[in-house]
Image (spheres, rainbow, N blue to C red):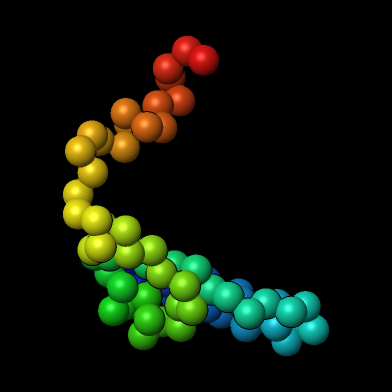
Length: 68
């Protein structure tokens, strides 16, 4: 996972070097926030750390197979 995050940081730096303003690098969640910060993340998602585990699995909220 760290290898992927490092690649994302490299891509962000290349975009910034081409004079396109990129101020944020969003990667990481509650379970890996320390590694994300070490790899240069400027925005992390910490919902689980604040609110706890969801009552229902993600598939309950985002089920692509569910008819609309």
